[in-house]
Image (cartoon, rainbow, N blue to C red; front, side, top):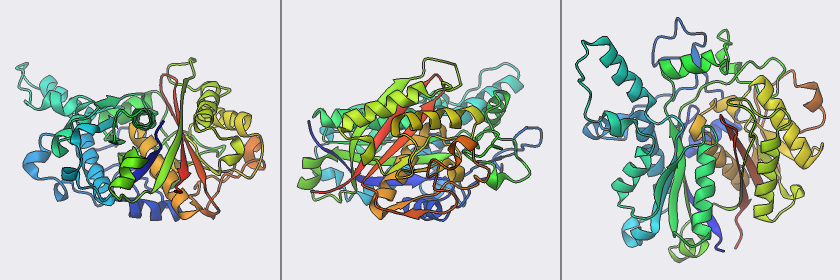
Length: 414
């Protein structure tokens, strides 16, 4: 089996439009939540979200090109471009038949879908659909567009496992390269879900916070007053390649991926198993895949979306895996970014990798009144970042349908 290393990253998030800005905001506990500007939310229960800031896709993509793509594909292209640049990759010097794309998105072009169907419903019944409607909407199009842009002819597909999506994609990439099926694969996830239908739909399922009085503190994982997650948007891109391939081209090796575990709650359409059964199985599978023990993990980036039952079930699973001890730093970066749905795993993988690079654990913000069972028995990295050696970091993601995906990253050494 081949070693798999990370050589490039790109981020487009509500708290930073590139990796460096994203990381600085994470370290400093910056909240990305603010009133919604993408549509008029006056009649919606939730009137805020974590939107991108000071962002115009036309600063990155020509207008004629951008009109062919939904925002989720535009976000993907922008994050990937940064990742390729940071990886010191000259694709023209590499065998593109051995370079692939495995991308993730939960909703795909939901904005395009809503806009086209609304226009049709409000019309006279004549089907005047945009010729780009279907290719803008379908969830696999981002991976296709990335491969077309760069001429990458290796493995190419899209994973969909709701909010576990981009962690699932990362694990797929890890396995393909480990098995020798590719030399390099671009992976990650993108999401553009701040739309009327998405916000209204999640409101109807009672998943979103409605703390409109103070959006910046609405995402508050582990706090007894939490009332739901805050919607986020953006993308995270990661370049993975075999160790041999990276060394041969003198690539900047950032970190290593050593384990991935997937499981299922097999319990409920939208809710997590109350005892965290799937989460437990996913973490154990990742540890076994990495061939390490629980004592080796220094930092755990939790799924922790700030939903009342979800945070508790995950913490029960963490206690079952790691016991009650304060050696392990735990944090919930969704308290700052909001929940990027299918892009969450990629963005949080970048947070883990930056924590390993810098030996700093980003904080959990907004959590004041901690659940009594967890208050004194876990280091939740509350309020401020903590300096510590981070050799191994674990990242959890869970999705509607009971999907579980856990990844483990390691500090790189020759």
